[in-house]
Image (cartoon, rainbow, N blue to C red; front, side):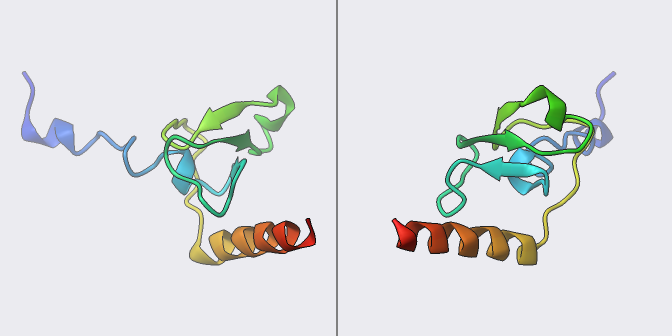
Length: 82
């Protein structure tokens, strides 16, 4: 009973933690789908979740390029201070 439209519902590849604004990777400069990071979504933050970039949930909100740039700039500044 599978149809081609069922495949359109599979979103884990594009709506995963790596592309979510609540994902804070351990290494923001080199983050990818196998990177670990914290989930900072307000309802989930209390659980101190460590997730990978390929994980996903129903709290997904797309990260903007501006947010990515800001996160990477902060990481580069912190790296320079070391």
